[in-house]
Image 1 (tube, rainbow, N blue to C red):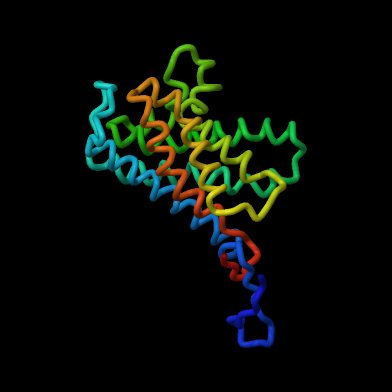
Image 2 (tube, one colour; image 1 turned 60 degrees about the vertical axis):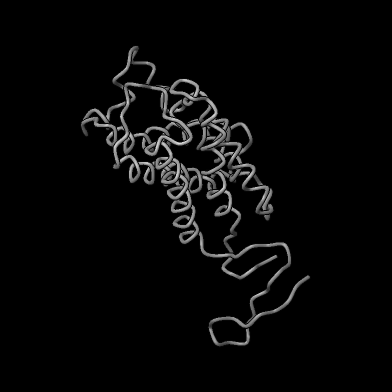
Amino acid sequence: MREAVPSNNGTDEACVRRTGEPWDMTDSRRLLVVALAGGLGGLVNATLCYLEWPEPVQDTHVTFHWHVMPGGFVHGCVLAAIPFAASAPGRQLTGALRWVASIVVGWCAGYLSWIPLDLSIGESLPKALAWPFNGEPLASALWTPLLYFGVVAGLQYLWMSREARGTSLWTNVLAASTAASVGSLWWWASWGPWYFSPLHGIVWGSTVGSATALRSRGHRTTE
């Protein structure tokens, strides 16, 4: 079903409202919305860790202080914003190149998103900025950021850069939640408990999936 609604510019043009579609907005505004949605999910998850709910993180070498919450917010923002920003040019790539690009996107997002969390648990700024290169062997820097949530961003990039458009809200939420759950499984299996992967993945995926369901034409569309 389609129905015309008055436009905001005072002309005779009309915005088209379609049943089954969400709000539209410019890409720059969408990037901000997606980033903030990711930040909200990251903030909630960091708060759960700080409150030790439903149980404490099992890695006893880490103590969470209150500033893990703003760190989690920035972490979630970066994980959501980078794959979204890369998805538009990604649609111009062939399937094989898109998969290669997902590794680059995942590495960059994993590297940058871990810095605020590293700082929040007491690491110095120089070490936080160079964190992938602090391990042994040095070549581990090639894959470590992918294991530290980079796979989340890589999978989300593959979803958002696909050619199909106009996917429903719940499909986007399911896709983002799956990307977050699968992409963080290694990390949470290492730090424990493993089930924080689907728990935190669903939280982040729900906020980011809702934001990525928005489209970019600048007209209002609702179900």
